[in-house]
Image (cartoon, rainbow, N blue to C red; front, side):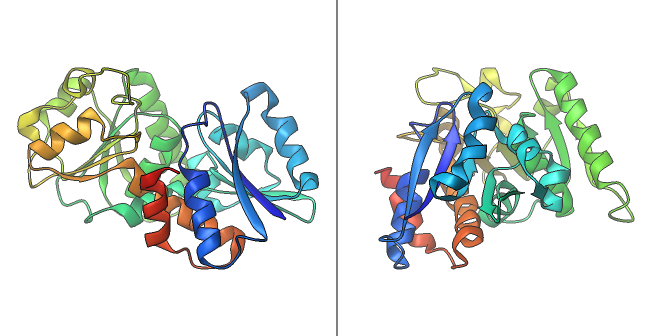
Length: 281
């Protein structure tokens, strides 16, 4: 049996096992491959990852809070993972650990349309936000980054701009923004990479995030990376305002499809993965 897993803490809420096992069944690999969830603390991550290959694992997804640490554990990494500074997909072969970041292409694949001249606002400055900013900046978008701790947004922008230096005639158009700047600017695309709206949090998104209801509407697309058993409060409110919304499940499906292709060499059955991820079982 070839084994796969998602590593995180917490990880019991993850839809990845349901989604990936359904995909394996759909392409005829269900009897040979299996995908599971493994909860692991930051202190135990290195030892666990080092043991996976000998336990029959050929790959693993990595989620919060381990994406940056996963990159450090790898023997080799893609250019994208190195520039982003985080990995969410590991592969084990020939005694080596290879790291990739499928969050970035997954985000781009989930976009309903490319950001226009008003650009994008990314909320958050963690590992997922790094991939989102890198992907959008690399696609030519003007990207503003907000974080509750402004220094983290500034650090993210500086590090990604430095990583991209020399890769193009003009570097990506990235800028940290204050709460007031974010609230009073217009954007074509808004991506929530924070935990605001996580099920049971009780957060009011318009109080916790630099968003104003009158800045949303049909001309704006919103992607919320948070997902749970029901729509987040941000997704519900944005839809009520006529905003085009892509939820976290769709982004999960798209990045999971990239991981699936890396491990199996097969094209992922998107419809099957989407249905299983939305059922969550």
